[in-house]
Image (cartoon, rainbow, N blue to C red):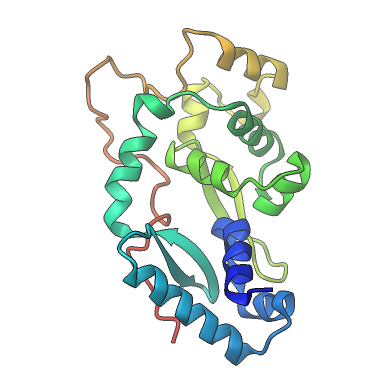
Length: 211
């Protein structure tokens, strides 16, 4: 097994939760020194490769793959473009799980859906529908997620108890007149509230040295 490839695969699957040094050494059955060398080499390879849009960051002693900061505006543009205005079935499922089960971790979301959901959670955060609500006190202190005030306001909810049943939520998405991401704006207007809530943290603006 190629250990560098194995590590990159694990970091991809871990998503925004990342992996701790203990988790990396345990999963790959390697020493901390070997793991640290792999991390440094991986980061250098991504940063030195102009064709790579990814980099490796360390936050709160957890390692994760992130998009390079020079692509932040492009990714934000995609998030509000016509190409991404419709929630996929998978994204809607993920949003419903978070809305009805919050607060919960991404691993719990994955367990409910039966598949990996890191990318979907990030997209929902870029849309301002989902936010980080802190971290659990369990080992690794994974991030817990919940819905945002924007989510509540858009659906006209006062409390979470006002949520419609799951069938109604899916029917709303199927309605052709329903655009979850128009932010209540007329066509051609700019978002008066500025950047989309929840975009902080996806881009490597503040990279912490691995060494």
